Image (cartoon, rainbow, N blue to C red; front, side, top):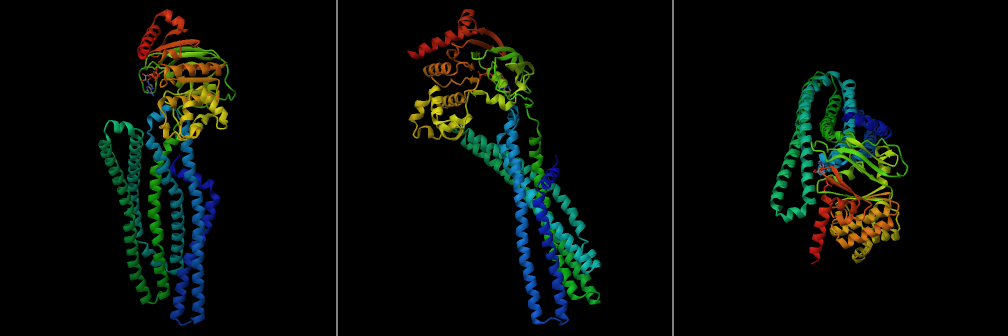
Length: 580
Ligand code: ATP
């Protein structure tokens, strides 16, 4: 969709506000052009000595009333337009947020957070201004221009009007040149702002690393450089916008000069009255606003177009995972992964090569293997963040893609390697997937995740705020809060992606014991580097370089004496050395 289509569709949708604004505007325009003509007549009658004192007072009273009416009408139509244009900002931001929520990880891999934030703030603002301020000035300027020109042409003297308008085509040409420059400069300014945003976002997110490595001054100078670039780009855009003013000034001064020369000639030769020339000069003065409005409108539209050039493609980018599934029923039955082959976009090396695993309903499967083997990738496929290039993943009778994505994800509890906590209380973080959970349910989930006692030691217990991303909690506490969150929803499938890596082995054992009791009849897939976390699983799968190399129960794998058995012995030895 083009920028003008966007604005047109929006105006059509909010036509009531825009029509009301236009009606008030027309009234303002008519009153505005009526006043100079009225003043012209008064001057002529004054010169002819036809005016009494009472008549003068009466006429001035009428002019004053007109002025007051113009004021209120202007306020009224601005209100109507802004009510509508703010809605465009709301619509764009909501749509951007909705699309971002639906996009998969490969989208976020290609986009930068600061850039996306800039789109929702600066760019959306620029488009909103085009639908509000630009429409306002454009409407107002055009109506005033047309009415003033009609009055000059038909009401005063058409010859004088033609002469006075001679400089305006030159002004239009200058506008065209300036407008292109404003567009390019605005686009660059928006890009620079995005880079600046990226830098702020990354520096703040990694502030601990920056400090630990003593990179503060290097980061500060990089930031200063970007800030300077952004300021320079904004200045360039402003400078080009400022160029509209001299073009308008020059055209109007030349028009005034031509009017005085020819108008003076007409008055001298009695072809025009002084009152008519007075009206004409007043009308010429009234052209100042439409001309400035034209410059302002063009610059706002160019800024809006430049912003839409950045925001539009993000809104129309196809979703990385299409949600064409229709099944809304609770998924049930065994989870079957069959011959799955998957390579990340633009990666030559496949992350999964012909993986087949079956997870019977109510059973626990352990997934282990060296780092980079493809364990988390398999979980991402189960969550439908990516689609495999070959093979199928099905739950019960149906392939995963036949389920509606929201339905599927609602019935999978996933605890990531590095869980994300929101800046809310501990209780709110646990209840994230079940906002109506009672305090007793929240505490029960925390007990199952062995974090209840830790929480009670916090200054405000369950109401303690966890800070942004849960900074006030230790890594192990964050993991256990995330496990409690997953357990509270009690969904049919629980995916633990190395979710116990930051807790000690004793706590891990007690969490796993609680899990076994609490999740009877529900399936669990545990990914872990620590083999003790999967030793009791019903089935264990070893992944190496994206392929299944060993599988069976703990006893079977020990008997096989492969990677699993050697890792097990190594980890047992390590644990016994730790105890010494
Ligand atoms: P770990 O135990 O260290 O978490 P893992 O077994 O979970 O490792 P994956 O994260 O699934 O391994 O990664 C499998 C392979 O895919 C690795 O070679 C990794 O570099 C690659 N990979 C992972 N994520 C991406 C991505 N977003 N884009 C491209 N390649 C990726």
